[in-house]
Image 1 (cartoon, rainbow, N blue to C red):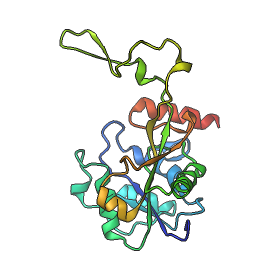
Image 2: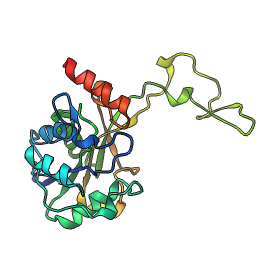
Image 3: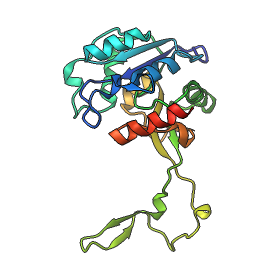
Image 4: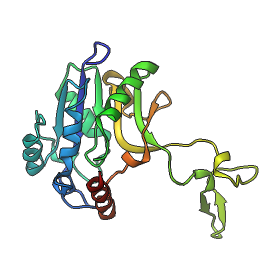
Length: 228
């Protein structure tokens, strides 16, 4: 509990990963990828219940082995490539009632630690906000990015009176890192998104903000984790 409110944490893990097949149960630095998230979530001071949302039997059995609760099997129609990320969360909240806050922990962020999870919850409470998400400082500023016009000529992504030459002079910018999403349950049911103008952020360091989406991401994370 936090602030006398109950906290439900959800790990969404479908079986049909395309970029890295079967990545959620693939061995990463000595244990299945999903195990890294389960183990950190179980260390939380605030999470009252940790559950898995999956349609895949092998993922379900692996999560059970590491002590994660599986109160239901996710419907197959909510585990497709076209399923939006919020749908499994809303489905879980319909299945399980009685919680005030929900935490979404994607298993593709294995370098996230419990301090990030609890820090996101604490920031939500301290700012009296309905939602908080984890972010990182991107390596490349959008103020130095361009699109191409119909003639394939460079057009600044963000219009500026003049191009800032020093990184130190650029405004601070942040990017979602996919590690932690927290929200009030009733608010999320109405907004159907963790990201609104009311959402605040919890800034994580880049070395804990790696999100596995490709084979290169997986190999890079494994190299980093074996060095720790």
